[in-house]
Image 1 (cartoon, rainbow, N blue to C red):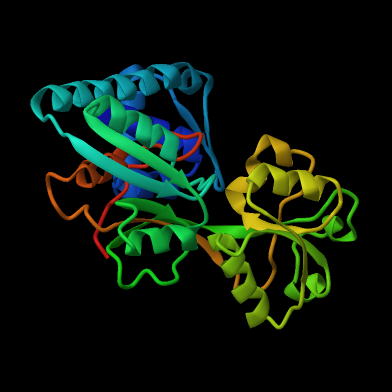
Image 2 (cartoon, rainbow, N blue to C red; image 1 turned 30 degrees about the vertical axis):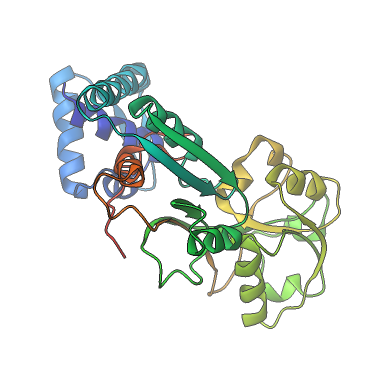
Length: 307
């Protein structure tokens, strides 16, 4: 068993889907299938049960999974130790991020960066995406993780990923009985949304306007957990990225897809004004994005092509 096999095993176990696991690991779907079959032949047992719609680990697959995760973590720790011993990076790094991006675990990234480059003094700021972009333009930040595709064209940036938005009606709301929500059903409803500086607020405003739907934002918040609390209390509906609906605080809410076409996508990007300099701390942070985890998952191993 080698590390690549363990990487494929973990990706498939997390995604439960060959196409998505192949995209995650940067291999063709046929290559991933062949690698998993080879591992199963090597071990003499099936690791996954395949159906037409889903892939599930077998008992043997679940037994192997923690060892696979441990091997991947030890390999990452070993690489970090070598880099720390051979490349002493110093200076300062100013990082900003929106809260709860879902597609990248910024806290895990900062932790790994600090362990690899302990001589770098890091400063972390958390606020809305549009405020973060302003801080980048005024040279107050070196790197920012933002959830918007507006006003990015003039800044060096890399898209990390996308996911659809879903509707979270309050418990017992009439919309909660539907299988999906047509845009017109949201007309004149009360909503909970984030403040104007957040990327999701401008995304929602543009989407509702494009569908000719009027909504009342009853409460504006600057915290994901507060938003979910207010929805649970019946103060309004929320339209949020899909990962927010998976939070424990949303356990009592039904996440419903938007019907018809034109469903907006939550887009997360990393923006850096100094990452192009090979020895800048920002460049070393961006290196780690290639195998940093998404929230609650294993490394995403992103293909970082400069926009």
